[in-house]
Image 1: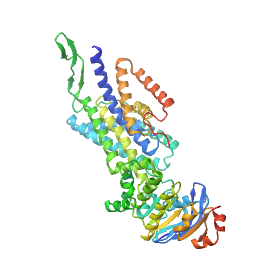
Image 2 (image 1 turned 60 degrees about the vertical axis):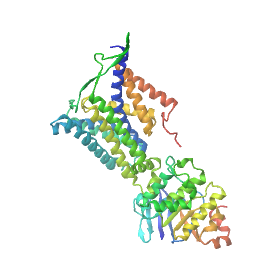
Image 3 (image 1 turned 180 degrees about the horizontal axis):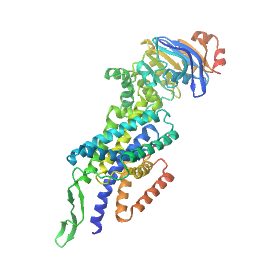
Image 4 (image 1 turned 90 degrees about the horizontal axis):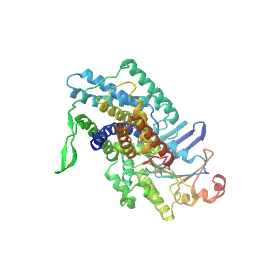
Length: 231
Length: 308
């Protein structure tokens, strides 16, 4: 579904990603693990075209999207849930979802479907997004991305700072999307959460794909965590 | 004239000034709010609006009303297109870097001013108002028979001045509707709040910037077209509105449209009233003092959001 080949990218003269390659299939959950500053968030932004790749290729269903202007990337069907949620804080819940719907010209049916997944948001539609609790904000960020009816979903630390019940809710949503054949890339710090849902685990180190393993391999060899994540 | 009628007259003059200033300052505030850049050439877009109004009315000829109405549409449109083009060709290429944008718009200021001097010339030209009926205003006094109404000599305004106030209110409401209720407004607000995330949801931020820069300039030009039947068009007329717009935007809070409107009315009215009773210089001194006080005690302006 989504494939990265030998991606180099960075900010100005600071190179962050070095010849990074990975691929994720429809209905697969790929988890990125790595230390802070390893390049996980930069990788997400490079896929979205927000950080330009200096070389290499990003392809979506075989089509090259590397050089697309950033605003065109989501129109191809990539939903992005950024780190820290990045909601449009002063705008209402409903307006935030409207932005998501407009991205790919989706309408009331999509909105209805998304709100069925997060019924709590239905009661908060006219409330400014910044007044929601942390968990509700994460639901909204997820719902906003799902308003694209994405083929690929990028989640950057979605459970950061959430209480366990909310974490479970987000995990359930991710698993439900996998069943709908969405390709998912998940950045996550909590290893237990990763082991529970991941099909593939990629360790990112110094902007490179240091190792690709399955959850079974990771369970068998805890040394990997020590080596690449430092826990 | 007695004090009461005199104050009413000064208030009306102040309201006309406040109306024009509101439109001009809103343009500056909109550009800063969405794009986070300071447009030093804003006053020149204002001047261009006035000068183009003169070109349009003198080319069309015929009745003053038709020429003026044409200018009211054509001048802001042309100025807006020019500004959008300048954004696309210049500001986009320097990546909207705040410092470089200031330098670039200073350059733009001189280019526009000098090209106008070379084509339009150094003289001021009047534009005929579309209508200009003198309206005498009544005042009240207590006599032996109770409250009675009379028409003091000299207490009057013109139908055109009332039109300027009405036009500003209509534009303001239209802009508010656009920002709060329309899809375009949603896109503008999303871009203002978080440009990067807006792009991740399919919003072409560069095109939005060009549109906003054009809209900001068109608002200044609209204010100038409205003022030009009262005050003549001249190639240096952009300096004062630029200074006053900055004062208004600082007092109101950078990027806050509501604050801009309140501050524009405050500054425009006080400028008008103080100029009538004392001197225009005192009005400018007080406005500048107010800016200093705001910067010291409320650095984000009266309505500005605290930086996150």
